[in-house]
Image (tube, rainbow, N blue to C red; front, side, top):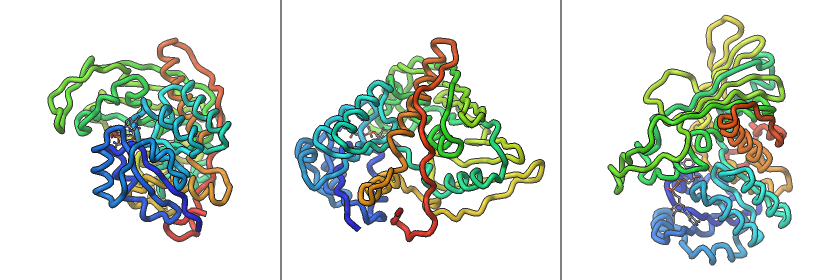
Length: 365
Ligand SMILES: NC(=O)c1ccc[n+]([C@@H]2O[C@H](COP(=O)([O-])OP(=O)(O)OC[C@H]3O[C@@H](n4cnc5c(N)ncnc54)[C@H](O)[C@@H]3O)[C@@H](O)[C@H]2O)c1
């Protein structure tokens, strides 16, 4: 198989997960890493046996076809536009951008240059979420009528050493964690038609809980408890709550209620987890998983799928259509909360193709 050269921009927290998983996917050839902070790039290069280079050198390297953009959300578009200007495809960590307008700029620049845009999350390609997709498509719980989704935690400052960006415009619990839940739901149920939102914050500032800056206060500039009512084009009505204001709760991540049964979908921020279904009033049963990538952290699957899609000239699954749609859903929930009215969406998308079950590990096509 032809390998695709990858250059990584952004060598912080999440880059470890990508670099650890990358050897499992033969299509990926990680050429070099760069960071606005050169010592972060040097440290990552040393840890993974790679070369750290200045940003400009990475962008100019003709061996690199895809820029993997692992910078903070507020830098996703600026870095993405640089990649596109150099004729590179770009695969970004989520969210695609902090505003829909910025995402549209990136997508239209990429279209003009005839390069691809891909975006995390890719957890929906994991074994458990593909199992849920198969069961929904097979009609195991009938037509999905309603459901709920909950992402509620006390706040990432408890563990992240540089958590400032989570509390700046363009982040917060919805923009940060919503992409996992919404991408998972759109993969299962198809696109959303309209939303109603509500948003508030419990605290004006937060305290960093670990690392060199432990004890420092950071200002909260976003809503930290956001709820949305989602009307899907299929007719399903799903309520979603994302919060950094909740110390403890007992809800499942996602529950779906169909005409003939119910389903519990595991954490959409992970690749593994049990999918449970119940037929009518019978007890829960754990579904058999036949899809791969359901037993670990494969946070690079979307990039590998995009690289293989370039080789075989097909649409990649974690693509710009689903990420634009998800970003519009999130922005519209926040807009609805401040405007006090229902928002109809303008973007829609097709459900990505299900993952195949008949291929060796690391090969997606
Ligand atoms: N930390 C996690 O567990 C996690 C999980 C999933 C997704 N993500 C996503 O991954 C992205 C990065 O998160 P993180 O936790 O690794 O952040 P981080 O702050 O730990 O790392 C970001 C890195 O990007 C660099 N950077 C910022 N702007 C840059 C620019 N313009 N050019 C070059 N380098 C630049 C920073 O110097 C830093 O080293 C975010 O979009 C986040 O939502 C994080």
